[in-house]
Image 1 (cartoon, helix red, strand yellow):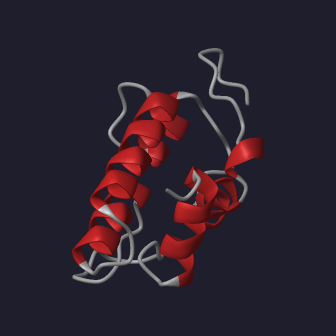
Image 2 (cartoon, one colour):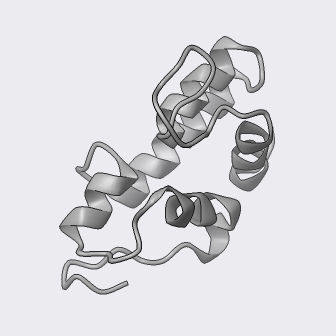
Length: 101
């Protein structure tokens, strides 16, 4: 099985994680992008589940990374900022309750 970074990289490279509206092929939310990637054979079911589980651990009770960033008062939370997190998952900022990253 690929590492989480390898899975993110392939979802981004194949266009499943993309800014804009949801479509049959892509989504601006990585968990949905993983579902699209699985539906189109880009990643396996186990990899899809791994993406959803690992992002869930990172964002906690929030439905999306964006929602978690809003709650934690992260200033730089546009799509480009979220893409940067997924391009270098190992160096993702910590979400802290005091509103600082």
